[in-house]
Length: 272
Ligand code: SF4
Image 1 (cartoon, rainbow, N blue to C red):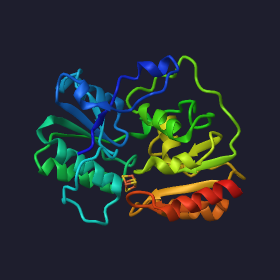
Image 2 (spheres, rainbow, N blue to C red; image 1 turned 60 degrees about the vertical axis):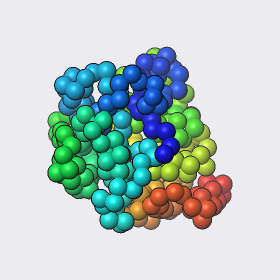
Image 3 (cartoon, rainbow, N blue to C red; image 1 turned 180 degrees about the vertical axis):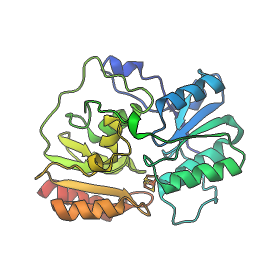
Image 4 (cartoon, helix red, strand yellow; image 1 turned 120 degrees about the vertical axis):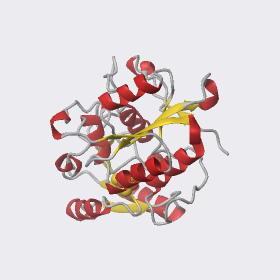
């Protein structure tokens, strides 16, 4: 079983150092964790931590943590949802609670996963992002000159700690765009130049507007953009529409990115 990684304090980000969203479980004296998925309201996440132990590490269950297949879900489930359930089953009683994003900021399958986990005996705390809590935070990372993988990692870390870094990265004009959610297999991100801007749901996360479809569909004109979705995700409807509109490249992937997808994206990035 590969090592599992858990959320780390993001103090380092305020000093401008790279953020590590995950740290090794064995680095903690306690074995229990609080899990979350999607973009829960920060107040609910904070209250859950206070209730179950502020010192407990947070783990983002959306991410591939190396858990085996729990066989709870059909094969045609989006890989992110499968990660959530597989990770929870693997953690078992070490999972003190799951703070589950089940509103419009996530998707039907997130709500279903929360339902199933509760029926399996996990303590599930549901969170729905109300419209009046949507923010308008500055886009520090989505438009930054940084490796794309690091950029997305830093944006997703703002779900837990939205504090702006003391010295933010330099922004740049976009030469390319990446639209979508954080991919299950992040290797695809390494194909893009540092001048790639982030669009789609990840940009909505940084703006603090995770259920804002208008912002999710906002893409700068003339920027060659890859519209990425996990297979079996309803966001493919948006990706298809936007790729046609902006003459971008729509791709979807289920588990690991295969050579054919890598070659397609690499060619698109190089030739556009
Ligand atoms: S990729 Fe799509 S289906 Fe999967 S969790 Fe995200 S929004 Fe839901």
